[in-house]
Image 1: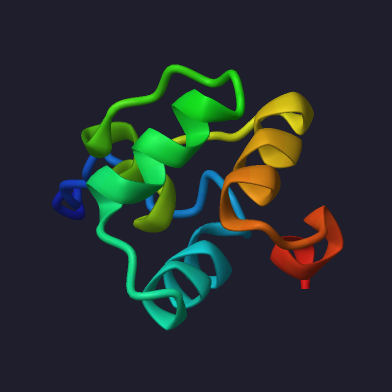
Image 2: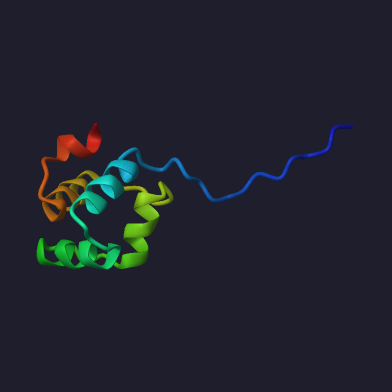
Length: 82
């Protein structure tokens, strides 16, 4: 009988925009806290930890959140989608 492999319950593929969001944030010299602040100004109350989880692909992003994230980063949503 083969041994069962442990599979982590954490998933790192819940969104496809996290890497792009991180790159853009860094290009703009923003911290995750800065980005969370910009998002709040755009109408999205999000924590620094949630920003981190999005960038790591651990948190799903709705279409509305995508638009708000793009607004906070001051780029078109299509840029985040690749």
